[in-house]
Length: 202
Image (cartoon, rainbow, N blue to C red; front, side, top):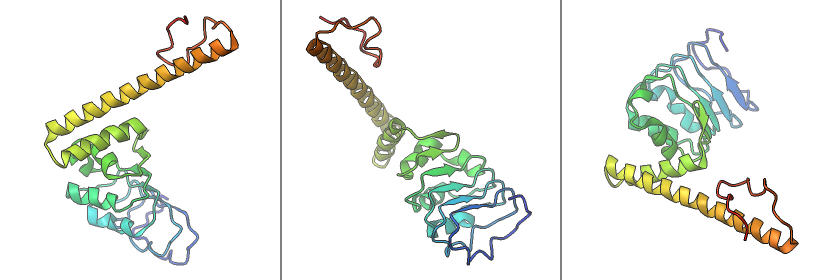
């Protein structure tokens, strides 16, 4: 990294390479990496990538992690999302610091929806709840408008909360049954593992 490199080249024989860090250079195009069958992590932050075409080569790779933050990437939003979507095993993505990010409506939800295996986006992980809400929002958006997508997300959020309450209730019943079987009295601090276990035992 930080070697004023302008072109990715002469790596054809590095077939065992798993991680390639070329951050802080002057690279304008991702290229000449398709022979690296074991490459899983590519770091090209702070380079000179300028449009979707300059990164399209990633669709020929089997990446799990891609860091292209703080470049100059601009272009068609749908083309960008589709290109990322064509990396089906991508689980970590750093994209912030590019001009195109500001042009993607509902950026985080949209990227999480389009990248099915994403577990980490930019500054924080993708939780199961976030993925479900983004999935409900994105699926609805395909068939309705922004208001319909927002409504679908609210329904999913309510469902997630109800599932949480049901788990809390099940935990309470489990602890209650346990104490009854053992004939023990619950201590004052028992049942603090869940938010709903504040009821008294009968």
